[in-house]
Image (cartoon, rainbow, N blue to C red; front, side, top):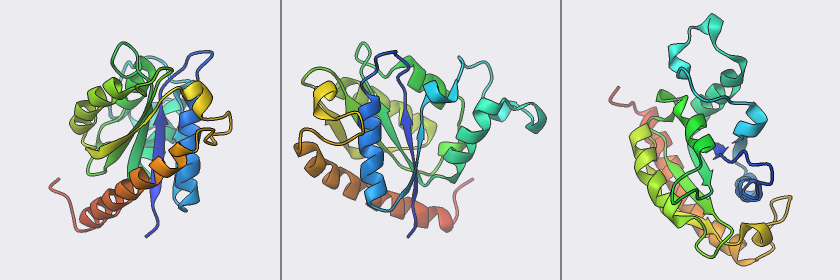
Length: 192
């Protein structure tokens, strides 16, 4: 079964380290033969939300929303890569995700969290769980926390700490199951 996954990343800081985690998980998805796209608000130039994507008519949709909307619509699921800002997800991540709604429905999500410290952003991951459910993209039970992201993953998204290669296998095996189960269920119809 061919699978498409959007990796949604959300830091726009000048010295951001989490992009390493986003590249790492994208590399791991690519190794499985999944078609992945990285959505990065810094690269997309996403401003603070004024109107949701669905509130624009086709002629007036801003360019910066057209590609992310297509990626999300075409995806079978989402991996959200989040740092931890005051025990919550970064504002740029939530801002990007809040532009969209129905694009998430009936598709699973998975959370990769990271931090500079030893806990790997798990408090932000717990915040994201309820948020993702509200968007209509329930998260899988497992998360992949990455501690000391500045030294655990290199600039190209390769694990310096080899344990992350092993941890990612179980995490992505679980996500794979949900992706396939939800895709089959969507193919049989959704409640609306």
